[in-house]
Image 1 (cartoon, rainbow, N blue to C red):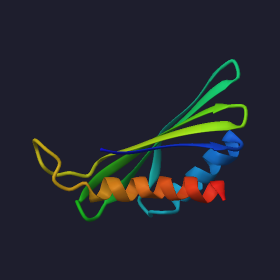
Image 2: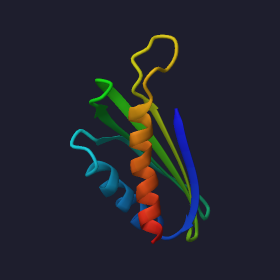
Image 3: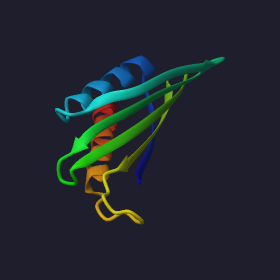
Length: 112
C-alpha cells in the first residue's frame, strides 16, 4: 500500500473534476469504480475509487482518494493498493506507486 496526504486551497468541485480528468486520461484502462459525495453542515467529503490494469504485474491496481472540504480548505488523502501477485506478502508494488504518483502529480498541478 502506498499513500499520500496533502492540504490545499480551492473549490472542491473544480478539484475533483480536475483529479478525475488527470487520473482517467493517465491510463487507457483507468476508470472510476465508485464515488461518494457526503455533507455534514459546512463539511463535505468527496470520495473516488479508481482502478486500472497494471501491465507490469498483469493485474488490477486501485486508487482511493478522499477529499475533505470545509469552505475553500481541502484535505486530500490518497491510497493505492493491489498490484502484487504474491500470496502472503507484496512482491511488486511498482503499479501502486505509479498509480499514486498520478494523484500526487494532479494535486501538485492543481496547486500551481
